[in-house]
Length: 510
Image (tube, rainbow, N blue to C red; front, side, top):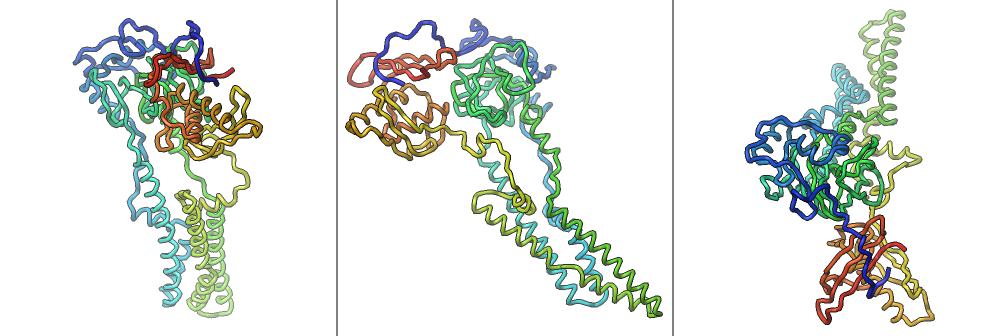
């Protein structure tokens, strides 16, 4: 990376704004499509498209198939009609059970059922002390488990409500912002840096558009998007370069696309339905407790039967022998075991909560404790999917190490050349980072990045040297966006104050 005056850049470097035709579309990056009258499309039949079909068709064909106009979008009447016909752009979650039902769900544990039977038998035999102690143990176990799971579910619900998803859309030729749940196939969505893609889109405009698909692919680098149809696509997400997938994040550039699928019909929806269909298997502890409950039941009935049989052989009253057998069976049931297990798991949940981990079901703690090896996707799980500048070297071969991580100013620039004055080295590093900040389209706001990770890392490194808002000191006249062909980005600027000499700032790979 170098800063200063540069010769004129090659004329064959073009902007990566992509569109197939700009004759009929006057937006920044162009597009074309068949126009619809105000009332056209009201009640019309439209065809549905999979992402594979849409990727292989031109966007004009997709627009015609979905009965939309990429210059004006759907009219409001048609959008309402489609919303009623297809439903909102959201996932259908399982209906929540009422609280009383969730409470009584806790009684399905075989050991709890056995304890209930023991309490009932104790009452019938007028052993009220035993019945009271067993009932108290059951209530404690069930209540602790219910309260813990209820609190966890509420915490998860609050997290889901923190950011109501919104989107920018064209309706009747006007750009509007509304909840993403109101999107329908055929809507025209406008994408900008930092936007979360609200539905599966067939892109028809892409100005240096790069989208973070790490939630699908695990890849750290954003995927570059195009608008041209593909001859052949694979089964994976990575092969569909002209599709923006629901739930992914715009890291760089801007674009527009036609909504082809919403809600559970999207690629993200397929994953959601698969997860909803999965039944959580029982943990080893649950299986062990179930086995213990069944074994105790069999042993109890066996003891009762054996004692009654022995009493019958000895000529004793059957009712007396039955009472003795039941008393022994009840005494053999460990009513304290469920309390010990539940309290132990609850303590584990509390320890996890202190580390900001929400445990929805108590037995999950036991499962986690049995884990020997964790196989996890790195990006966004073990790491935060953030890039950080660690080392720098200027054109004068001065070397510096940068401390701190994340998109913030926490850290320092440490110099290593003791033979050269500190001021000389710092000026060289400052010039390097100023170039990286001026030739940059990212923005860091309250440690949140809007833009590409590499550009965010350069801004964070500059902030660690006290360089803030250096772009505001210049007027940008021209930009050559980064392209994979030339592996560089350049901007032509003039200072706002103190001169009119044009300067070029360039960053890229050598």
